[in-house]
Image 1 (cartoon, rainbow, N blue to C red):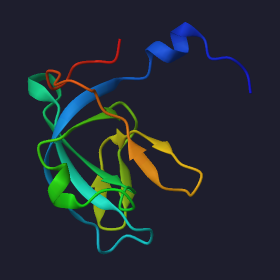
Image 2: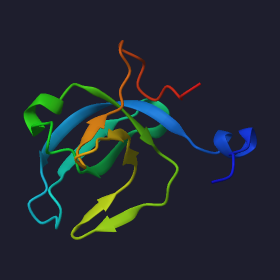
Image 3: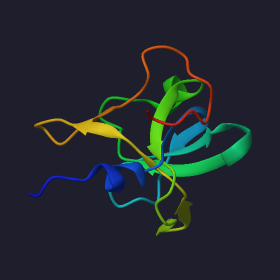
Length: 112
């Protein structure tokens, strides 16, 4: 794998947002949770499907901040249009632990 240049890294728009709603994505082939996330005034609210059911219940995600890539193309997942990619750390067992700030950050703040 080759090294990523700083210029390439700067193209990734990774922002923090607050989960407004969360519910199981019943139609998904792989277990997932549908999220609506507030990224502040500049970006607004975006939707995402996240395969995080091993460690999280929908109700515990509401009000929690997450980090997401907001400049990928939208992706149709069954009947749902995902507008951003929520980030997490893949564990050896295939489960995902969310990547999130350890203190509250303003919605829409970009990773520095």
